[in-house]
Amino acid sequence: MVERACPVCGGCEPRTFCERDGVRFVRCGACRSLYQAAEPDRARLAEIYARDYHRLRGHSGNPAIEAVKQATMRAYLARLEKLRPPGRRLLEAGCSAGAGLAAAAAAGWQAEGVEPAGDAAEIARRRSGVRAVYQGRLEDAPLPAQGYDVIVLFDVIEHIDPPHGTLTAIHRLLRPGGLVLIVTPDATSLSARWFRSRWPHLFAEHVILFSRGGLRRILEAAGFRVERQGFAWKRVNLDMLVHHAEIHPHVLSGSVIKMAGRIAPRFLRGAMVPFNIGEFYVAARRI
Image 1 (tube, rainbow, N blue to C red):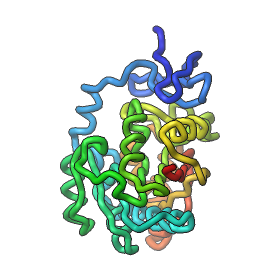
Image 2: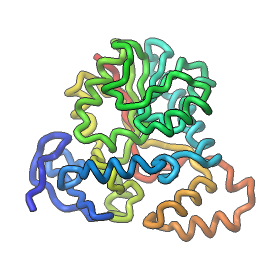
Image 3: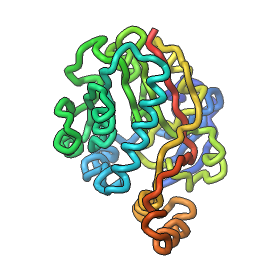
Image 4: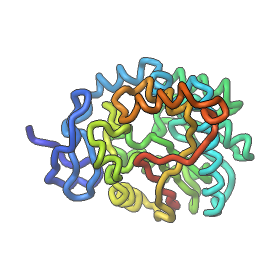
């Protein structure tokens, strides 16, 4: 089988990384990103996203998940404020069921969202208190050019192949000097190399898993200057980890996590701690 060129940098010499759920992932020999060897199966992806996707994948519908998503958003907003965005109008692309939007609005941001899944977009409007949630793709949403000071994407860009149109849309929507914050799995992380096919971020809908260099490269090509990059320390609690272990049986140590959830007292199950299993963040400014 002849693999396609890397959708991030166009490089060649891909090498097989692993196969999972009938999808073969390869690593680009140039930028080190991981991507699906064949063109993504659009019919299969449409079926995945049509089935109450966010709840079934463990992104919403559980109080522990909502709590950690809000805590994570608050932490990243505090980090963004140190970079001095030009204002406080924020757009979350791929806002899921709206936990992050609720946290942003509570912190004083003028928050809006875009969410492709219609059911999740409606939940986000109802539960976050943010009415300006547009259902559809970012590129197609009726949003004002240069209308936003900050655009955030949490665990979103790995779903987009090719990513260049989305980055062009973000550049168009940001004011000059505005910031984009992206959090995504790190294809060159130790956890990716150790766990391989059991790495928690390998799904059929994750069509590109970026290296840090690969994401920097396409951001700079789209008109951004990378200002910060590092480990994506999310907030988690044991209740949330148990929920994910029950949904995703391939995750390494899932049985240990579930056992810990059964024996830990309630106050420990809800305690939030910083957590990273192979993700990174990039904050870049529109220039």
